[in-house]
Every structure is written in structure tokens, then in C-alpha cells.
Amino acid sequence: MRGVARARIAVIAGAVALLELLTRAGVIDRLTMIPPSAMAAHLRIMLLQGELDAPMAETFTNISIAFVLSVLIGIAGGLVIHARRRIRRLVDPLLASYYAVPFFVFYPLLITIFGLNRWPLIFIGFGFGAAAMVIATLNGLDRVPHVLRKVARVHGLGRAEEVWRVTLPAAAPHLAAGLKLALAYAFIGVIAGEFILSGTGLGHAIAYAYDSFDNPTMYALMLLVVMLAIGLNVAIHLFEEHLVRRRWRT
Amino acid sequence: MSGPAARAPAEGRRLTDVALLALGLVAAWQALYATVGDVAITPPLATLINAGGLLGSPIFWRHAEATADAFAVSLVIAAVGGVAAGVGLGFHRFSGLVAEPILTALYTLPKVTLYPVVLMLFGLGIEAKIAFGVMHGIIPVILITLNAVRNIDPVHLKTARALNLTAFETATRVLAPAVTPEIFTGLRIGFSLTLLGVIIGEMFASQRGLGFLLMNGINTHDVRTMMAVILLIVVFAVAAGTLLLAADRRLHRGARELR
Image (cartoon, rainbow over all chains, first blue to last red; front, side, top):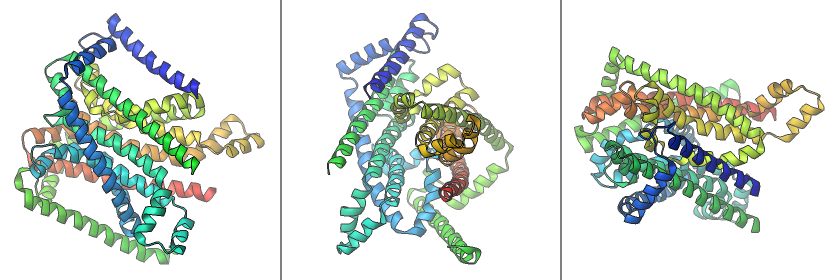
């Protein structure tokens, strides 16, 4: 396992080094891309000067709200859809083609509904995340062993108690997978929404830098987004390992 | 559930359900229109009529063709490249373990934010759209294929060895049938995401295609065209998704019965 982690770092370091070499040697010209070291240096300055504090706070707030909403409503939706076979059969094809619909096109509509504030963006992040959570919840519920239901019935648990004490814990690994996706999609939805349509947040900062031909800022911000995406995945991975360890113990 | 006699009423009820769902969606849409008004959306019937009008105009078909061309190329690249990479990484355990989290992280990236780089590399044209489609679609295909190959039951391979099958026979008779259902699921998801990628690419990096038509509608506050294009894209996406899901289910059921 150590070897794998080392090889992984080597691959990433190699890719960065190659990019550095190509940009420094002029194979990729400076107008197209700046060297990764220059991106990092510029990002450091921007972070130290605090000019990213406000957009980052804005983006993180939006992502957090979108994530929490998609998890709560996604799990609730999954439970309801799972309980009703007829609804399930209708909704499955919709869920299957859900991610082909470019959600951003509803932004003008969302502004008319919510007003010009953070809620249209949160809604986009939520819309992205919730479907993944519903799908994961359904997957998890499908795989709850039948015998557990029987046990719940034998013990005379009520509907709510059965869900809370038996069904959800049994589906936990799939729910964890759903959490992972919901977080990733909330992240994508909010930042992409900011980038495309809104006037605030990290996504907008990238679009603004691009429109004003400010390559160093644009690449510094892209680096930040890439690092955030990696950080997010590492955090989720650690959380998952923690869960697995706990499961083994009990 | 079994036999044609039991199937007919179930099929009938199914149609009623679909009709009810469609009716519900249309009613919700109409209600939304009643609250927000003409600024943001058009009502269902008007949108349908506009969409019909679009379908009759040659300009629309030029854009649709541009999208279809880019989509077809991206889909082939994402499918062939994704399956090839997934099979390679699946068989080579070490590379698979190294690559999987990197790919997952790339998948988590809001790829739209990278569009300036894609534009600078490929320019304003079909190449940028194709690159965008591939960027969105290829990673899930790789990841799902990788997992399908990695999770092949070792008993299958042992049996193949015990039966003295050649490498080619093992590949075509044992491995391919074992991984096909999962890979199809990957391709199904890749289909949706590639389409999304191409359309998003067109919204920013193109002067042609349905995505461009859509963005143009948004920018010029041409709500009628915007809504009609959205409706057509959604109908296409849902129809294709439903068909692929049905095929997917059949493949998985077939695989279960063999087991």
C-alpha cells in the first residue's frame, strides 16, 4: 500500500514537472499557460493578501448549504421512492438521464423565483447533489437483507424506528458513497454555476480573470480549485476509512 | 409477473403511470408559469408549439447537426478510450490502485472552470466541443470499467485455465461476457455526461450547435427559443436514457440468470 501511495505522488509530481518543463521551455507558450510554479507563487500572494477571503467564504457557504440540503432531501426522497414500487418504476428512467440535462440553463428562471442572491446557486448545487443522493439511497435500500426487515418486524418496531435503527444503518456503505457524490456534485454545481452565470464566488473570479486576460490570476484560481477538489477527495477518503474501521470494530 | 397474460395489465398500468407522471410535470410547469410569468419561462403548450416550429426550421437542424457531429465523435472517443483505459487499469492492479483516486479527483473538478484552457488549446470550433464532451464523459467510463474488470470472479479465470482455453478464447468467451453488463452501465452514464459536456462546450466555446442556440437565447432574453431548445434537449436525453436503461437492465438480468 505504501508503494501505491508513493507511485501516486510520483505520477502527480511527474505531471506537474512535465508541465513546468514544457511551459519553461516554451513548447507551450506563456499566453496559453503559465508554469505551475508561477501559478503557485501567484496563488500564495493572493491568499496572503486576503483578496480571496470573501469569494472563498461565499463559495464554501453555498457548497455547504447545497450539500446539507441534498443529503437530507436526497435520503428522504430515496426512502419515499423505495417504499412505492410504482413511483420507483417511473422515476428510474428520469434519474438515469438526469445528468444529461444542463442544469445551468435554468439559472434565469431560478433568479426570477429566488431573486438575485445566493439561492439560485445553492439550488443548482442542490439539484446536482440530490439526484446522486437519491440514486445512492435507492442502491443501498435495494441491498438491505430481507432478514433484517423480518427481525425489525419480530421486534415490533414501528415504521420510523425500523428506518432509523435498521434500514439506514444497513444501507450505510451506500449512503456513504452517496454523501461522497453529493459533496462532489454540490462542489461542481456551485462553482460551475458561479463561473457561468453569477457575479460572486471563486467560479466568478476565474471567469472575471479570463475575461480581463489576467492569466496569472486565472491559473492561480484554477490551481486553487484543483487543489480544493483533491483536498475534498482526500478528506472523504479518510472519513470513509474511519467508517470502515468502526464497522469492523462493532 | 410471469407469462404474457399477467404482463398485459401490468403494461397497461405502466402506461397510465407514465401518463400521470407526464400530466403532473405539465401541471407543475403550468403552475410555475402562473407564479413567475413571461420573464423566465413559457407555458407548456406554447413551448411545445415553439419546439414544433423549431423542428420545422432548417436553421435549427443545422445547429442540431453540429451538435450531433461533435457528440458522435466525443462519444466514440470517450467509449473506446474509456473502456481501453479501464480494461488496462483493471488488469494491472498496481496501476489501477495508483490511478483510481487521481481519476476520482479529476471527476470532482468543476470542468467548466477549465474551459479557458480548452479554448486556448483547441480554439473556437468543433475540437473544443469534442474535448469538452470527452472530458466530461470519459472518466466515469474508465472508473466503472476498471471496477468491472477488477471484480471479475477469480473462479471464472481458473475455470478458463482448467479448460485449457487460449488467451483469445478466454478474452472472448469468459472475460467479455463477465464485464459487458457493467461496462454497458459505464457507457450509459458516459452517454449522458458526454452529451452534457458537448452542450456546455457549445454554450461557451462555439458559434454553432444547440448549446450555442441556448446561450444565445439566454443572452438575448429570447425565452421562447431558450425554453423550446431546453424541452427538445430534455426530451432527447430522457428518451435515450430510458432506452439505454432498459437495455442495461436486460443485460444485467441476463448476467444474473447465467450465474
